[in-house]
Length: 371
Image (tube, rainbow, N blue to C red; front, side, top):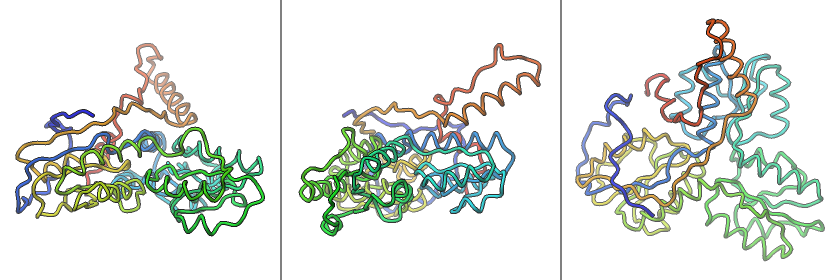
């Protein structure tokens, strides 16, 4: 665990929204800022992939479901010409479409391809791993206990991989209500669950099915776990914790629940700086769900204006990187090559797009101003 003085993520020339001007009624002594926080590798990849599609195709570009669970990010993309749909049948034939980071049912993927347009599947690789596990276990004759939230897009897509062999539960009562399976039983999980949610249900499932199979590598997202660990480190020291993220973000809501369990008496989920209450005082913890851009974090800290500064508490340094889907990378390479030929400059001396070096939060600042 490392403690550093955090001075902010912006230089004066960096685009920012107008500050949430009104000052607080009370004094904030200091801010404890959790690290890691905010965008994970899967979200980073999805945002970049949709950005590259906007640049490669004339609008509109279609996206099945919200690309990530953050309304501000979705709105930025809508302003840039993206149309979000809940049914791929709404997409006109031949139009480009992206499938969201949460993973899509196999029939949705096939329907998108049948529409005849350019399809990019931006599913997080960690979700793809769970889909593969479902398909493999079902093919081997297993019944699958899937621990996930009802209605969550990741859970819906995962269960559609083998609907006759999978049974969703999210608590001990759900496990108790499962039938007595004649087949072998496996257990898998929604990647964004908290360890508390997962371990509690897992123990009940193990007691119910002693010969239970589970993967050697956890289904839980490492980024979700890291953000929870960092938040748990600061929460007991705080008079209040602010969790930045959307209400439909599973990992954001897990941070809220865990902060309260860690002993913080006041925990608030907020969308942005405008929702910071004006009666906070003392030491305030700040973190952000995996779908929340970094600019929201620093706007919240600006609003808090701690007199003794901001201290970043780092529990682990993340360096995971997921490249854009292969077919999108091939498309971008072809566009670059065509541009080089058109400009008569050839490929010599042209700098190839280095996706890894680009910050996804910075990309959002190039779209329409925040409303």
